[in-house]
Image (cartoon, rainbow, N blue to C red; front, side):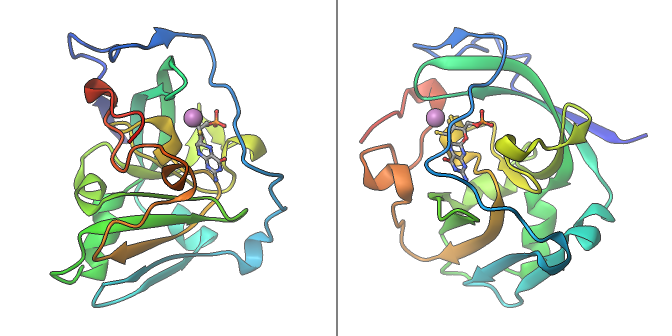
Length: 195
Ligand SMILES: Nc1nc2c(c(=O)[nH]1)N[C@H]1C(S)=C(S)[C@@H](COP(=O)(O)O)O[C@H]1N2
Ligand SMILES: [Mo]
């Protein structure tokens, strides 16, 4: 039996303020995403760590998977209930890297050049994962194939698709949308939409 984590779906204020439910997530991409060459693909965690993590897609898929049921909240005011993900908790990966004391924030780097930032503490949340399945199938191309980070406690723009690496940093450096005025943290229940 796989361990199942359900994230925030039992809370009374399940729908964050200013959001409405829709059926399916709307695909947003800042630009066209290049094909991935799986055999040469490497996922990395680097920066302020004692030991860098570098793993192939096959190696990641051999890790003990967990299932996550989570709602998805886009800053443009739509939310989608009960998306089922499969992957590995980010806290398990981060632990093996032994973050240095001055590591306080992360920057997530993606294949097409998208980046996003948030406090390192979110990678220690139970429901933060690196996913390789969405609704019981390989993550569809436009939803982040082959790997996606899923951070249900933050708005969906922080759940970066096509993830290639996570960089641990000392200072909070704005990513793609954060440079354009989106919030540095993005907690939906506090309506941290824009700066
Ligand atoms: N790499 C990457 N990840 C991304 C984006 C993007 O443009 N590139 N868009 C973000 C935004 S704004 C949202 S709302 C969600 C949308 O997820 P979906 O395209 O799977 O519906 O992905 C987020 N992750
Ligand atoms: Mo978004």
